[in-house]
Image 1 (cartoon, rainbow, N blue to C red):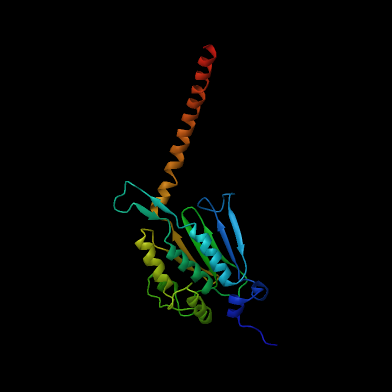
Image 2 (image 1 turned 180 degrees about the vertical axis):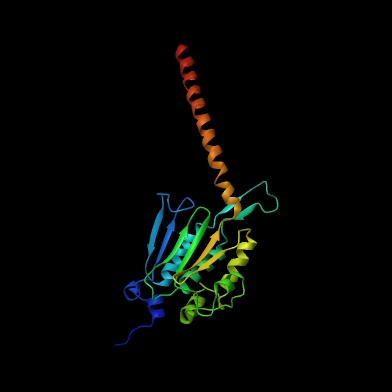
Length: 232
């Protein structure tokens, strides 16, 4: 019996997870900096890799918000995350993972960072120190899969995704990405622009104090005109 190749099932299969159980993505979003916050969003994204990539693009687009600071004349606009870095990290997580494992790809958004977890170790010949020291040569784990992703304009031709992530994060004023790897998974962490950490702290506290002070004043003013009108 003829069986389709894995990359064909991943890209064009009608029941992808039936043949490759781990070929899905879990996207989670937490408003805080860890998983203890009960108000979280969790989405399980099945389907082909093309379906998953397009849905993830939509979700990550919502993370690439821009904050305007009129007091900063040099760089008034700051992106929380550069869109190009988000896309490259997402494509790397999908394209470089080990699909023989049943663990899903995981992308988790926190208030101050986004983590991309790709099941499986680094490709043969790639060391973690090389990755951190920027000396790793571009290399695809799944060549056939990479070929299609390039032509769908979801990935770059020679696979320089790591360099692109570094350069776009630096150009946007964001902290450098963090990479980690074990036999179980490869992790890429993109940290938010420092301006967003400040913005999420100060306005919330001052705004709540203003609301508490202004509410009683409005309540006291309203009955006075009504009382004077009744007397006249």
